[in-house]
Image 1: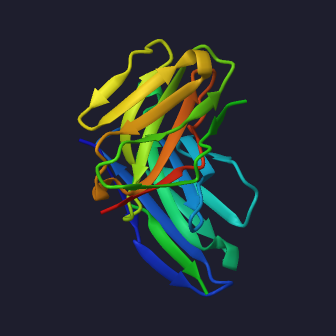
Image 2 (image 1 turned 135 degrees about the vertical axis):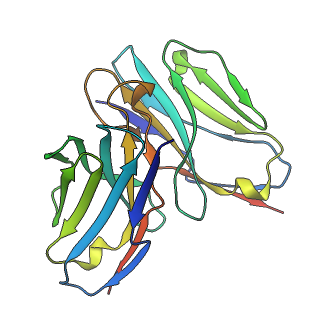
Image 3 (image 1 turned 90 degrees about the vertical axis):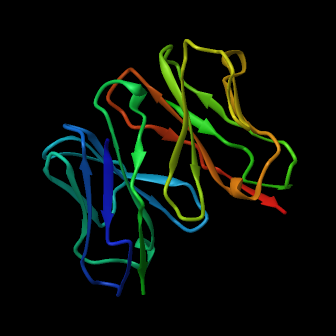
Length: 114
Length: 115
């Protein structure tokens, strides 16, 4: 069966510090991968998605970036965090074909920028 | 472009009441999928159901039921005899087959079930 991992689970970082969040998927090959952000009490905002190694699509211009160094690894980064980067970050995966693009989500990382 | 509207931002019900969460979608594609996800207080989104555009049969799973009506572009979710454990944010989502594009999510409905 497939599983998705995210770490860390929680993170408190000062403004201006760098960020690296990691997501890995097990039990499937060549998945589509996604990063979402959810501000407190709000909906999901798609940040990035990837259909393959090195292929990243950005949905929202911001100070965040994403990379996919391996087939089942997706990394969200920032060189300098802003207060507005605080939120709940969710990674998800889907099959390239089939199931209509149904996504499966990781447990999330709660980021607080102070 | 695709769009999903969940007009109900928050709903509060007393335990054992039935509750319906509304979802209206927009797409010009004839082949598409609709989804519901549940986000409990722990934060992780849990997949509940997937329905394709060619299957308008209503579905029931325990206390959960879904009513898909293409004529009104709606995919509503009903919880019968609600329980406190049903308290969560519920998201409706849409995907189309015209490209390798991500799901389009609604803004979610926060359901509070009071004991």
